[in-house]
Length: 258
Ligand SMILES: Nc1ncnc2c1ncn2[C@@H]1O[C@H](COP(=O)(O)OP(=O)(O)OP(=O)(O)O)[C@@H](O)[C@H]1O
Ligand SMILES: [Mg+2]
Image (cartoon, rainbow, N blue to C red; front, side, top):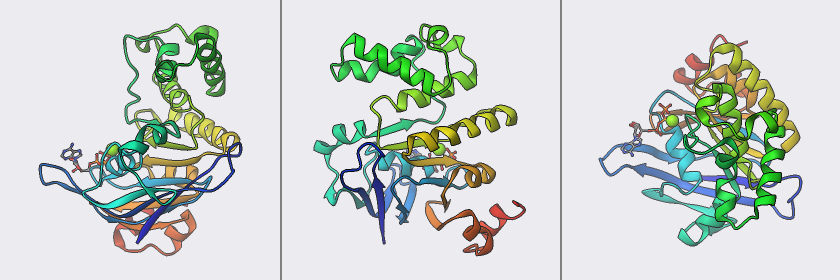
């Protein structure tokens, strides 16, 4: 089977961009088989949620979509062109990545964390300042109050929003989010999830989001891909997973969710 990741934004919809992950298997050098023949389709503008227990291969799959890890078997294609080293840098500019645990650089300010990669892309200081301001406002933070802070001066929720702002720097077509709300208490988590929903609505990105939390998956995902020990057990809408779970593992996960 084949994975198609269709990529497009409302502003750059000149042609459908498709990433295809074709029969992806991955074995780490220590012999750990993290992914086995994964097959999945992500449609343009949808939010696809990857869910499954700890260690089932969600982060590995997300890194593979971004070209950070190369599959042991199978191939990744971008618009039917196999992804190789020549494509990686332009590809990464089209993909925003929110990593597990945020990962802000502690010795850089908020503005420097958000704009860092734009410096490497030769943006002018004025362009970076303007973009940082726009992004901080987009994620609901006051640029005047936040831009010169260091990460240790931020609350967890603020740091998470800055991680999202940083991922949006180049207005990417695809957003990959690895447990973006995983570290928070239920109140903040719910607040961030609802902020994300309105951001998702206004930005119209294609999003792949990883979570352990089935309620979060049902709230944020157009479709949910359910993984277990490196395998993809089922992909479908919340209704499909609830009404027709592929097996007992899916049934146990979705059971009891209204
Ligand atoms: N660099 C590595 N070398 C060897 N094994 C690894 C490496 N990275 C991950 N693994 C293993 O691969 C499996 C999948 O890891 P992965 O990080 O993709 O899981 P995950 O589903 O994201 O888990 P979690 O929900 O805990 O973040 C795990 O058993 C993990 O220990
Ligand atoms: Mg992970």
